[in-house]
Length: 259
Image (cartoon, rainbow, N blue to C red; front, side, top):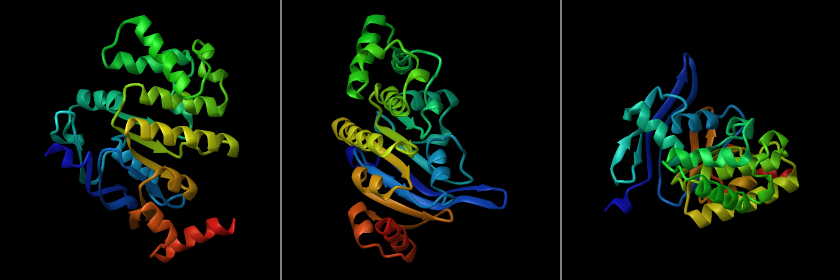
């Protein structure tokens, strides 16, 4: 049955830059509603992996299959350019660490949200604006800011707007690259609470890259630990963080406990 199939299936994925390896031999499945955290130090390969998974980079080796809404598993790199662009605008989302990369900074907050709705064929201005107002509220942005450009927003507000822009089309899979990075601690805490609630309410599948193990623990069901481009440990989040098997994972966990 199609519901037993994974939403995303990755097999022996690798990305090289000449003699340098970004990631290699990565395999895993994600099912509907599952959140996977990819953790590791800077240079471990986690961001390269995320960019390949989201088709921003082409893999050197391996395959990525995605279960489309008709239940058929498709090789995402065998899709046409038009099919892949539509997937990225509708069924997938990508939340960047720097929200300026995921927003159009010179148009209004409402237009940023509304563009995604137009990508799925909505054209009624009143409905689009009403939905944008609703989503601003869901990410804790005052509806009175709907006509303001993101450049007038704080960093935390920009990140919440980027989240609204990505989730308004009810995607099934969202990629997140250090979504709380660079924010003040109090802002991070509010954003994490917001993300956890939205992920649960919408039943999202998520691949989140983070160096912050507290973020991984709060948001994810499973965790993959990367080092030098390779996955060295994987398992249920609490299990890996409470009883890590690999010396490198033990070092990561102990370094957090010592802070």
